[in-house]
Structures are given as structure tokens and as C-alpha cells.
Length: 151
Image 1 (cartoon, rainbow, N blue to C red):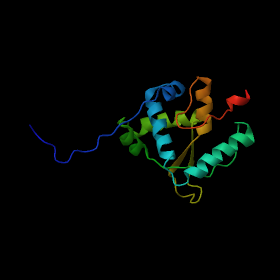
Image 2 (cartoon, helix red, strand yellow):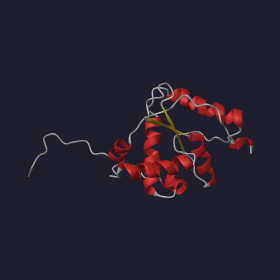
Image 3 (cartoon, helix red, strand yellow):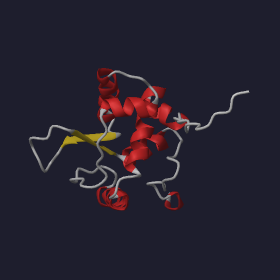
Image 4 (cartoon, rainbow, N blue to C red):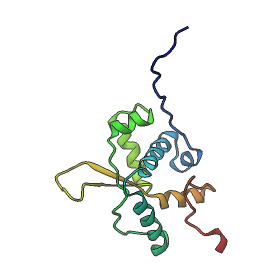
């Protein structure tokens, strides 16, 4: 019998049924979940949540306000490795593009340094929540954008 002296920590990737439902496939669901994971770990997460809440209240769910908080950077290669999907750069970008088109992610280049072409992403929690509600799901760990008590 062989004893492992330094076992490495195994990685796990959740596939959430509710995200598969709104994205259309498990690959996009895993990618979106990874973006949600990282958005919760940004240094300005509290401001990110507050900004989402204020936008929802102020604009009745349809908002075009400039969003300043919650932006993250992940390269396609990093995402591929973290999600265990093993996708090539172009395939990962194709999936991300669909998530942007669906409104689940926003993307931008560095607004401070215009020469920096690094793409930053921001999860649109409100858009995800509203789409989930249409499919009778909720986003685990987030309060509902709709007060069901008043309906």
C-alpha cells in the first residue's frame, strides 16, 4: 500500500441546474458560475452589491447607469483552467460573448488606461436573477430582486 505524503487539494466545479437553464448549456453555466464566484471575491464586493440594489430600485430593473464596482479580470486561459473545461482561447471567448449578449456579463477595457486592452468583466446579478425568476429559479445566496410580499 502506497501512502501519499503530500496529497494535493482536488478542485471542484459546480454545475448548477438553474444556470444551465438560463444559459442553455452546462459549459456556459460553469463559466458564469466561475464569474459569480470571482465577483464575490472582489475587494469592492460590498459596493458591487449596493450598486446592483440601487440600480434595481432606481430604474425598475432596466438600468443603464455607469457601473463602477465589481469588475474583474480573467483571461480565457485562466478561466479554462479554473473551470476544468480545457477550452481553447477562441472557444472560451465564444462562450463569454454569448453570456455578454444575454446580458449576464458586461465587458469593458481598462477605463483608466485606454492603451490597456485587457478585457474586464462584471457579473450582472440583477439580469441573472430576473431571468432565473422567469424560469422559476432563484440565485442561491442572493435575495430576490422582487418583494413577493407586495405582489
